[in-house]
Image 1 (spheres, rainbow, N blue to C red):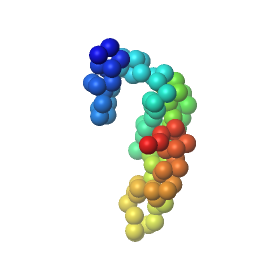
Image 2: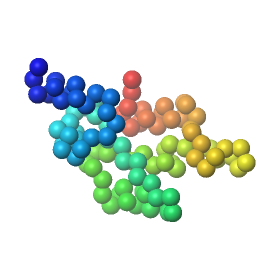
Image 3: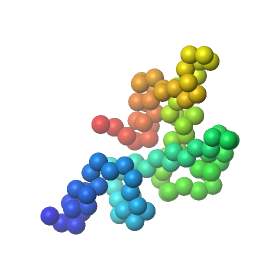
Length: 98
């Protein structure tokens, strides 16, 4: 087993990785980096923070813009899940597929 294969085995099914680990795989065509920062006190600030600096090639995954569905007062919560078809389209635009 070579170093890359060994790394692939260690990374399988992990959610968080270190900056050093990301540097090793950032240019892999199968890797999609999402920047999901959020500012509960100022939602527009998250987008500004993304524009000011993010990992090169990262896609903005804003909670309110990309990862929440329609808010219906008295029916849904503050951040309801989006419709499956809408979220599927969003992640496809990010380059995520099966």
